[in-house]
Image (tube, rainbow, N blue to C red; front, side, top):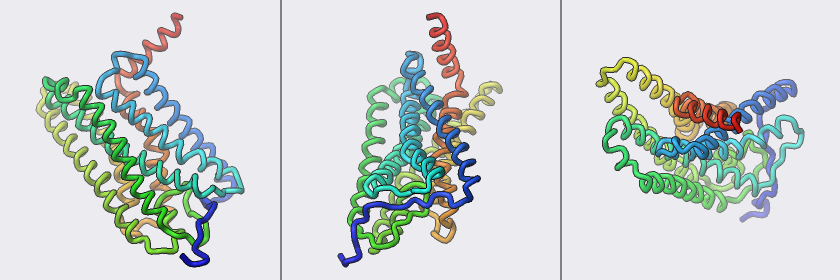
Length: 310
């Protein structure tokens, strides 16, 4: 390693390079979104824990999604908010690395959990008589544990490959958090292996899972079209379209971010794309997947009524 290739101690997150008035506006807006994320996902978690009627495979996976969304947003957003109202935007390099690792791990986990959730809905709608047998608690537990373990192992591979690199460039990251592609630009060594692994991982946890999700929903929609009940068909279409919108936003923004040619997404566009899966998706998921659901609304009413009686 050369004399100027050193292990850096801190980095500067440039964030959103806008005027101070707009920064305060963004701080208020993103703070509201983050609060709604914590509140919405927290309510979902609380209801699933408190109401035994929600102790089913579907809500078991929704609870994991809520945990992922809270963790994912909390890993990225607080530092972004602090930088919007602070002139000092430095961050120690070790926490920066940990932020990169956790962001990758939670993102990978969400991809895999979304696949399992789509398969759960496919079995429930297309094979209702065998649902209890296919989606047993053992299958659900193994699926959830496997999703978490595989995701953290894959993120660990990224981390190990990242830590082998020397750094000698200006310690400025043109992003609002330590996103892996932006951090790699600080390296003064060949990063082609890292880039290749990122692309391969994107195929594994983005393109593959997205294909499985779309296949599940295609089978679900085919089953819906065969139903005679107009009301049931409309409800199912509404639910599927909402779910597919969230899946499209999450997977679409991530695929464009990590698989499109570099010239197609300049750094400022990267920040906007990152907002979709760092802030908007975690906020929308509880609304789309849970709070529009009659069972969740019923559980919320029962919990509120119980508290009112006590």
